[in-house]
Image 1 (cartoon, rainbow, N blue to C red):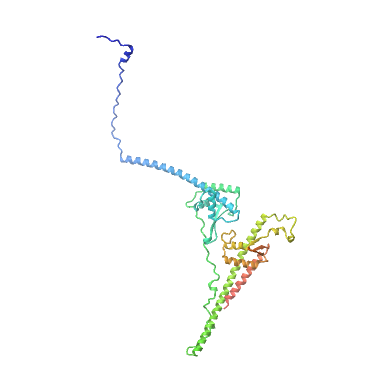
Image 2: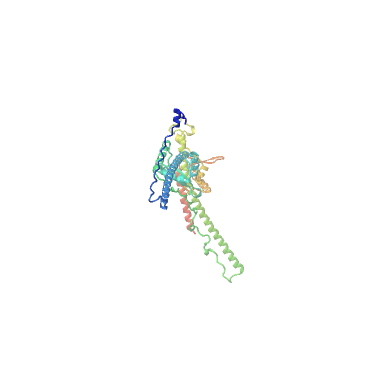
Length: 404
């Protein structure tokens, strides 16, 4: 058999490959004595564990949301307080009240935050003595007004530095005070008092009760002719009508005196309001005019005998302004018990009659009504005169009530 020569390269290719060791087989684990079976107890335990983990995660998320909401709510209250403080300061410069409805609109325009009633109650609770809310007027015409106060509880008008201090104090109280739920309620609306009676019923003599002994007697039955009996009846009816008219006139006189007493009492109230207006006008004119101590070099001839202070402290109040103060609830210088329009006009007429030339001088201005120009003094004289007139009217009324 012929031999075939194989080169070295061919030998390397023809060399059989090295034997690959066979994979070692691992002996199977020993079977457990208790197989891993999912029992109901194990399934319930795993389920409870999953629920606990999910609940804890939800609580953490809720706490985060609550903290974020609390921070946002606190920032809103802080912003609302700053807006309220600024708006009240601006309105106080005009010497006017600030109703809650107007405050809501002004704060919304200034801060872009809605001042709801609940938020306002929370701001009042945190602000403590810095803000106060109270009702002005009575019944349906009453309105809730808000004002700024200092530590002593007095009305104040804070300036720039004080506004910053009040804002910082509100922020400190917001961190230290926990807001109640719900916040404290606002003051309740005052009720309208019962109408004042002109005169109590026991003081009025009843018209029906007349002295029958004053009536002429009738003829007994069977006596006199029919014409005589008719004439006696006619005389009795005529006397009875006269007695009724006299009693009605007596009651009307008592009521008129009582009405005059009420007019004088209203005139006393109008006196105090007018005195306050005069004082306010004095202060405003003195603050806007040069000092009365700085007497000018030349004084007009009609005023040479008067001091410069007398010239400044001149006040002219129109009657329509006084009437508005007595009858309107929206006026800043109102009274606690507003009058009707008719009662206010009667009170001003009585005050004008008693005080003209004594306390003030009535100046008639065409197309503008009457103006009351102060004379400086005389208010106490007018008040005493009104009190004396009230006493005289009460005495006259007592005499009428006791007379038959």
